[in-house]
Length: 127
Image (cartoon, rainbow, N blue to C red; front, side, top):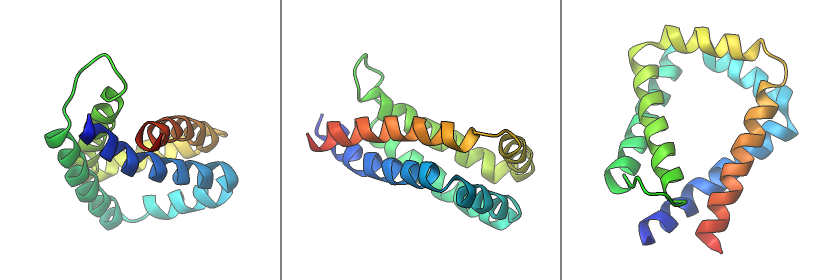
């Protein structure tokens, strides 16, 4: 459980701050995402970062239990998958990213989801 709390203390606040940015400045985040999708190199580098971070989480915290720490495991696996996709198929990332950006409200919905998960993990980590 100590590892779950430690990782929650890292992931929770980062997700919460990202969510605040998404909810407070959706137009700025939209523009940032458009710039990101124009750079195959940036997509690849963030894929490496996501893969390494996801593997670090999965290798230290691969807990499939019916309790809150499973959220950390799911985030870790999502990072692994996201990292692999970015590295192997940046074109797919651009296609999916542009399709998402064409939908109004997707940044706000993402911000709400990240806020809920981030707030929950922050609470579990620091409470």
